[in-house]
Image: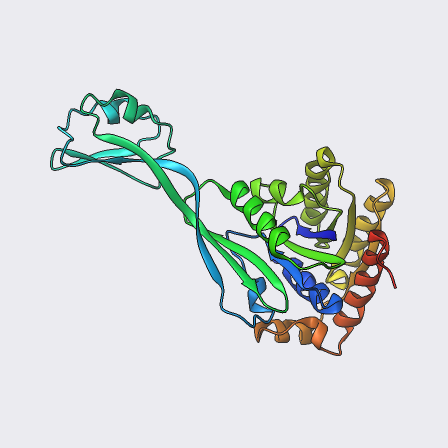
Length: 289
């Protein structure tokens, strides 16, 4: 099974649109949405079965037993994150500020504090004619990399035998992206034709280099700024990155996405260009027809 990860330097470049089109073109029966802060691949892919949902516990957080706490305040004095506040003489934990370091548990003379597993998010798995793995991270939780790894492992564990698995990654270069890159056969970067798009591409290249995973690049909405699109192609040539194509701005595609349809289902310039990008990407993976 070849593993293709699709990334972008920022949100809104067309990463998920490209991933959904690739899934449709390949008739892929194994794919995942690793953008756990805002997963949306399910909006443009059809799911035939009810999801299997599992709580994800990524870390621990402190809990104070109000029946034991005497309000001495030692926990709050030693907390470096300001996660403890008094209410009617009893201390409580702010779950969004607590980092689970355990200092409060250590210093409490009444043993009123305990570290407990924290439900950091929810894993979701669809199984039917295809396997789709995703998850949603709870607000304020910092275990994004661990949850992305869990999403990937769930797909690889349950997916049927297939030639290609498509992973829709997170924007940027943060922990979710780092966790997504590991173990991939190819990363396709959907670049934005702008000055910031070139900067984003440079950052993604630096982030991927330690993993020794090859990168390929395409440009979405290239005709909104031909000069920046040409600069991205020149950047790829300088850094010996395969440039697999460019997709024009297409109002038809935008309208289809708003109704939950994949560009692959349309007859429009964007679909034609994406098909060419898809074929060139398959060639890099050694899967060309």
